[in-house]
Amino acid sequence: MSLIIRDLSFAYEKKPVLRDVSFEAKNGQLLSILGPNGVGKTTLFKCILGIERKYSGTIEADGKNTARMSPRIRSHLIASIPQAHPVSFRYTALDMVLMGTGHLISPLAVPGPHEHEIAREAMERLNIGHLAEKPFDRMSGGEQQLVYIARALAQQAKILLMDEPTSSLDYGNQLLVLGVVRQLASEGYTVLLSTHNPQHALWYSDEALALCDGRVLALGRPGDVIGEDLIERLYGRKAALVQTAYGPLLVPEEVG
Image (tube, rainbow, N blue to C red; front, side, top):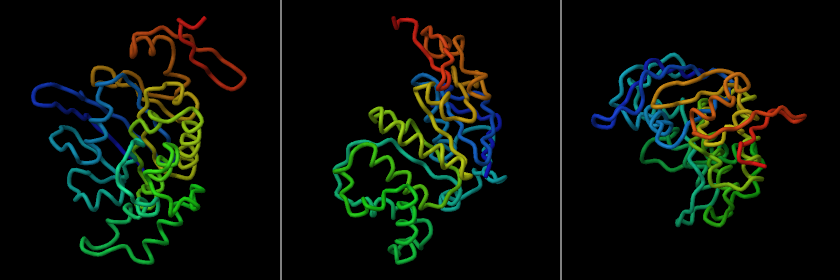
């Protein structure tokens, strides 16, 4: 299922945030979105999800204009996966995943056996079925992130939006989550992932999109567009792109 953005522009009051952004995320593709803080990555996701609606341009999911969809219909196509963060509620992991099935039942209904089966299958798919009864607030950040991904799978949407999913995770859990995301793309999901780490895009993505001043600065295969000039333009830091036996590696100038 593809997601097509055409000439998307958005402003908060009179301050432009996105300017004529156009790209296509294709079926089975992992697209990383790069850029410094405040460049419009989160705003882009909010427009796609229908949270921000006062934009110009068009957003199409599965060939349909999302501006004409109800939130319920949009939920069948697009799922959002937030960052793992501290919580105070005592839901279990299974409770959290069941929340992804809400659009499959009537507003006043509670999840039944069918929804429980969907939720458990989503957890088993990510090898976290053993966490079903574990309180969500007692989980590690990596476990919580996998639960959020399972919730999106239970939603049965084929387009997944991930806003900086590894920002609060340690190195091992970053690789765990990114490996799962890469596998989902390989299975046919369309994944948009915003990240502060261009190295992640080099290792895991099919394409990379760089935003600068609200515009698309570069778009293409990570190895083609992520280089020394782009890193300096985006982040104001010099870095060398070194080819290793394990793939390309960005090395900041300050190192060594």
